[in-house]
Image (tube, rainbow, N blue to C red; front, side):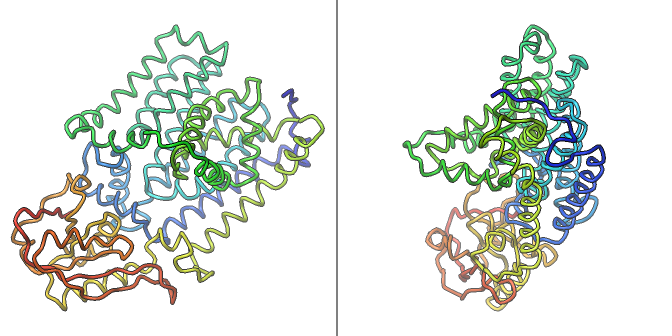
Length: 500
């Protein structure tokens, strides 16, 4: 595909020198909206779960490496156990990641407004709006990816081999966030092999020194896994097992990324990805290895929509690159021109509608709204209703068999100091103290989401298990979830539980 670069004044009507200031203002507005949403929206179950990790810091956990727990602990140490405090570290990292995207574009794209466009595209994607706001491992891994890309751009610009060391630090931090950061190294290798100027680094000690730094930063989690039967590795890499070939999940994966990037930013990114000159080679190299794996995985199993989150800094750069090229006349030129005009308004509309629905629930969709299900709307009242039933039946603690209910109950009953005891999935709670036999021998109340009712499991642990009714989680008059309650007593020998 032979393309010519475009002077800023010729793109999308008139991208004049004044545009960067307007685009920066838009980024500031988007950032403030993300902070405001992070302050007012209730926690997701996963966020509450990682908050539980932060109360029992360790070098590793069953599901993920530990960095998100330390980030949450820093926020709650400053601001208490509030939703904003739990999310504030991730929100701050999203600002840092935006700066890194801006600076990387300044180094790799010659047009003056390109950096501002890259930063704006990055902040307009639903992936960043959601995952950089939520207190999940995606927030730090996105920031680590943005800085890894920035440090390699400094290497590419000829600023010295020492920037490989900084890239190693970013990679190590990424690995302490999510194991998908292994793709950082794969992307760097693709870039070195694809760029004739970059191949000389393969004969230099700098990249290897950077890799060693990444390994040293990651070492605590490696040692923790070695002491715990490699459980996190088994959980995460167990997903790599090939299932039977199917096209069922491929369309789902592509559609999810099409939506998470927003449609026209996604299209622009594709055009920026499929180019042969050097200006977007680094960003493209960061995308190709992971994209190839996810496409392969989607031919055998489901790819969760957030898994490619760390690719979005590079994706934003590819989209900005496409803003400043002239394509030969034809359908490609028409599609790019339309995408240039539609990218920002469509993304802003999508993002605005999602924020509006999340904050106000203006559409009474109940369980049909994924935001209502994922976030703890109405759960504070539900937790109080559960405690009232427990007190009525003289239960001294709440039993659970599913981590999401455990996490929400523990968070929303923190001030009431009600013990919540998970009696299943002990590998999730290795860092927490064991429940005493004296506690388990007293009357208890088992709380089960009706869609994940583990009463059969509980019945094997206790002599008496009887139905004590249900409570409903609602937002306004719209029911979202139901929880069945069981009065439990008579712990059998060998029953164990944890108190997170």
